[in-house]
Image: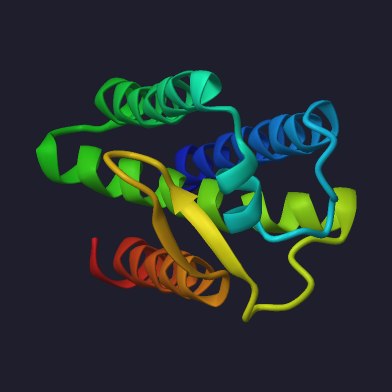
Length: 146
């Protein structure tokens, strides 16, 4: 069981890096300042590509759901697998962006977290905190309660 969750974490981290690279390329392709606010980026983002970006986000969630269904043993375990992998993906997305382009500048930086169904906007500390708490809670459950 430990190996399964380590591999799921590695998958989430790899997926986070891939998404981080996509964001770096989008910023470069659209000639947007690497250290600029994602809110400004969203406002300047060509509307014709916004739908495409939403489909990328939907595909990410679909991939995580499919992984959870394939790996999980029963509904509760599927939910745990989804949340565990999602949390690593979300947390390491910010780690990846920081390593690649030194963004965000700090944890108070406002970000566009998700575009579905409409933009979710919050400081970066919020998803980092939620993801960290999720990982910690699931780890405690797996090690001490299951």
